[in-house]
Length: 144
View (cartoon, rainbow, N blue to C red):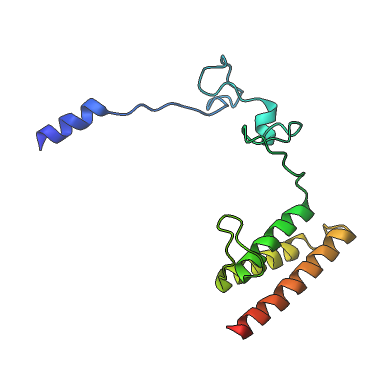
């Protein structure tokens, strides 16, 4: 028993404060590029450099993200789970109706939470996507 405690004491652990602000004054910490808490740039805070259009060396140009492309991405996932389009990873058409229903419900929640904050095009897109997905879901359930 005593041997186990000694082993744990030998390994131990080290705690590093990685907060960007000092806990006492709430002011930004200063440091060199290699120090903990340093090296965070404004581009990092925004979620990356948007001018490059590339993700972490993947070398692919990524499309601009907007509310419409986000909704279309969610609807594409729902279509995949409905068995309407093939899974891009396997190339196989797979059906997972509970997951498709969940994706459709997520889009519905998004519509409710954004009501009154969308422009006409975004509102029309939400209506059309939800109507189409719900009809396809009903048809898929009938087939099963």
